[in-house]
Image (tube, rainbow, N blue to C red; front, side, top):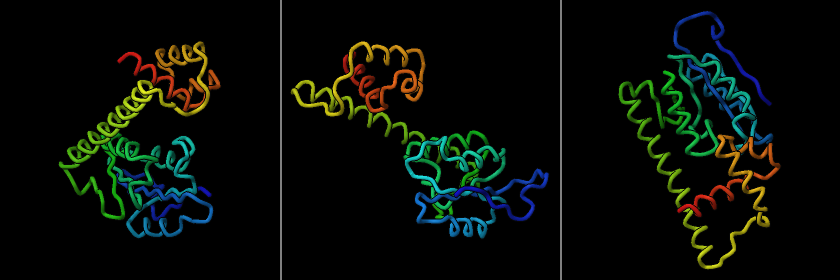
Length: 208
């Protein structure tokens, strides 16, 4: 179930900053009523809500996309917790950074963050979080590369599906070098995302 609730004069033409809420639950056995009520109580003028898996792609989170499109500079996005904004810590922090860059504030009902209240400190805090996200990305990449290199040296199994033909692997590398995203490469080749990632990581190992 998806949709939105409006309260007060949310749709009237006004230059006053607005508080826009976003509520999400992950299974059909749950509902967003409690989150919507809490967001309304917290002063939200409009609340977007949906039931969508925590593993759903960003493009499948239609009401989140609607809420993000609705926001303008000076507005505030309000959620129950930060994990409503993405599938991973890195994704959430990147979204915080993007909203900060657009002049949009973020507030969580659990009190973890309130960038409007942080004032001049908000860019510093969000910047620090963004730096930590970058560190996490690099550590994950480094651990993956080290693991594959070790298993190659010791003859261990790399796991996964049978090895992709060299021709298909070369095609993946060529498409990636041309700037295609993982999703576009999958659509062009029919190769699964896990295999695409393995080909690209193994290519990095070979260069090292």
